[in-house]
Length: 265
Image (tube, rainbow, N blue to C red):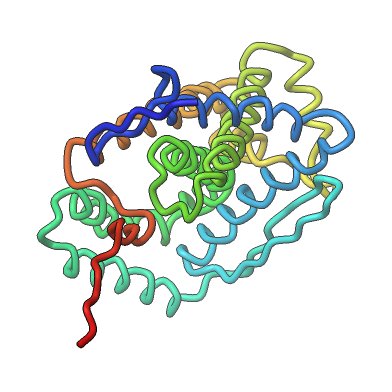
């Protein structure tokens, strides 16, 4: 076993293969194990955890108090109350404060500035219901991107052993989205199963979006399928961007070795 050291912005290799690729590859079979078989409920639970978190955060962001409900069997939902105007003001003020705080960071400012302009149109129109319904799947894709990035770079990871499991969770989230949206776009059986499979007897998210926008389910699923292809490429782009600039320190640097000798009088 031999690891070849490179510069601080590049990772060591194992027999010529970058370790990042190894962590990425190891995560795929773990994701498959978590998706099927006796412990398949774990994959459904991990996916539902992120999905309902997305619904809940989106609801609070739009001024609607919300809470998630998740069962180990895979049933999950997020219930939100009527909009509270004061919560919307807090969210809007938070965006403005963040934009001022990071005004010298072009990347952050390019995200927050449009949010300031779009927030009233999103929060105080019917668009908020569509955004809330889509937020679950969007959260899965955002977290998949973050977890792929962590697996590739080791950013904000305490131990190397965590990286294959971040990779597995990312594959799980992205894979489930791709399979779901693909079945809704290309197969009638998939659309019928989706119509029957609402948690707690409720109507599934994309069906409600389709009804709200007066569109076919397959039409709504097409852009979601395209979005589900992005997490891994985006994670690679973010990883390359990190290597081009200052490396992100995920843990405190190791002390120098050997330690300096201390001479006592």
